[in-house]
Image (tube, rainbow, N blue to C red; front, side):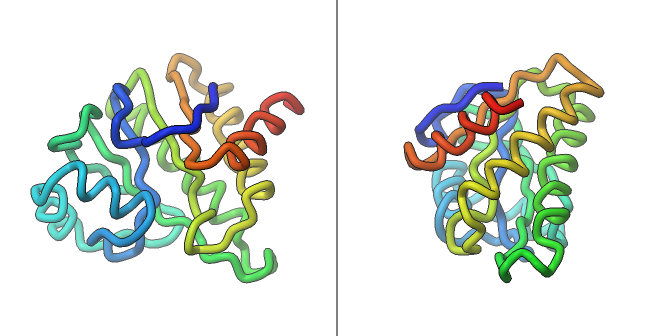
Length: 165
């Protein structure tokens, strides 16, 4: 596992994870950036999937992205931490890792799921992210995982969690 600050749409990895909404039809933040970079074919493919419930994951081609695949997952909206948010966020990471293994991906990049407009506190989200991915890697090593953070603040939280492990 490693942490970088950057643009997930430019990474040369087998798969990137999209912090999507349940409709899978694009939006703001990383979701909008991925849809713009991948081109209109991504939206067409997403329409055929019929959405994605919170915590689950769906796969599409990467289209115009350097990545072969996009693994779309829907993180929880932060409601104070008492509405099952940690378990739902952990499911996002667990299910995305399972899809990457199913695809045979050797490398996978995650954004900081739910920390944008969904309001999940960056420090708490980083804890769930790093611990969930570390647990998934213990059961199936061999996938290079990159946490691609939008800000240095988010990256610092991810690095601190990795050091704690």
